[in-house]
Image 1 (cartoon, rainbow, N blue to C red):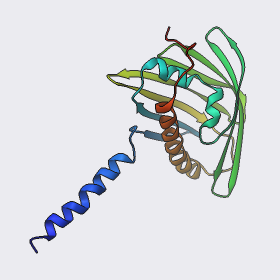
Image 2 (spheres, rainbow, N blue to C red):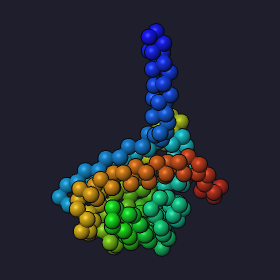
Image 3 (cartoon, rainbow, N blue to C red):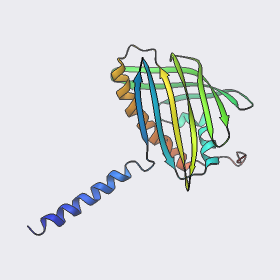
Image 4 (spheres, rainbow, N blue to C red):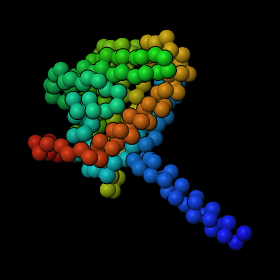
Length: 188
């Protein structure tokens, strides 16, 4: 009986450490439905500087390597405004969802990228990526508001949105941690 408590501790300590390692970038996701729209607040933290973080978040065509994004093509860039055509595909239960959009991004170097859908399959989509420097890491803070045009029940969309966003953001955080911008993308 004396060995039971130490045995339990030996078994539980690795489990608690494994749970801590499952979210190394502190990915947080909140999806709140309201009047047919979804307010999305999410974040993750990556041990990179704000310049590299900004280069990553504005590498629009590189986003094709992120889970669910099939196409991302820069259409135009004028000043701090960039227009990007995107195609996203998801499977939600028995439904295959493909969404096309033209999004305009407005860039504030090393701090903020706001965006708004100009046209596309969603009724509306807009939000921002805010970059917050914090000691040896950068926090990527995403705020978005989306109104979909779909026959899929809202509760189903909310469930899959929460789970798919968590996986997508974890994928983005991992890619950001490995991202090395071209030398020409120096901090301004």
